[in-house]
Length: 313
Image (tube, rainbow, N blue to C red; front, side, top):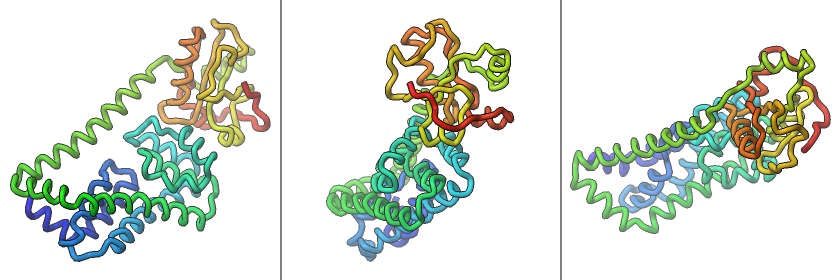
């Protein structure tokens, strides 16, 4: 354990840089505790708080700007990948997009305080064409607030943190084991939450080929698009109606309770579509199915999309 403390004291800036960089790139390796600890060890480390803050912000900007450029080049495909690998699957593209569309680049000021939001928001900023100077300014300010709060907490409770580190130091190898177990427990809990969330979405799906066949036969079901207005403007399945995930009422659908309803989104695992489908089923609609693969699978299959004003419900 003593070697770990020496590592933090001697190479604290390097540890902070790579920890922040790796976390902001998407790895489940929390950097906030590292910033708190290094903030508490400022007096014995020999480096200043402004330098520590600069290194943390620099690492965050490098990672976030990487996602920004990826979003600018590849669009929403990047956000889909991020949402698929995220340990916080509830923070899907639809939710992040709604927040970003409402507050714009200024939402980056608090992005790092919201689990699962930062990387997706950075890619979304690029996909939406946010100006680079605006992105760098707000993302850098947000990173400074996030890292600065951790460093401040560390300096504020430096005595308490020193006492805790001394206890772990006296524990020797067992102190390292305890830290490792705590990190593994954090990751395991996140994966368990993700697995439970994905299992809650389990229900029968309809394939894009099956839906296309129904449309060709003239037996079109009620098709519901639960994506954001911005995503819908880029193209939707012909005849689809818009529905807000947040505003479901009994009068939402113009169909009978036993009519066929197909719900689609652009989230991995059809997360938003499955949530809406389950709520519709609880409201009495008996034949509701999410579209497997969502709009991306529909387009990949070569089926047509339409644009223009969508019928709101």
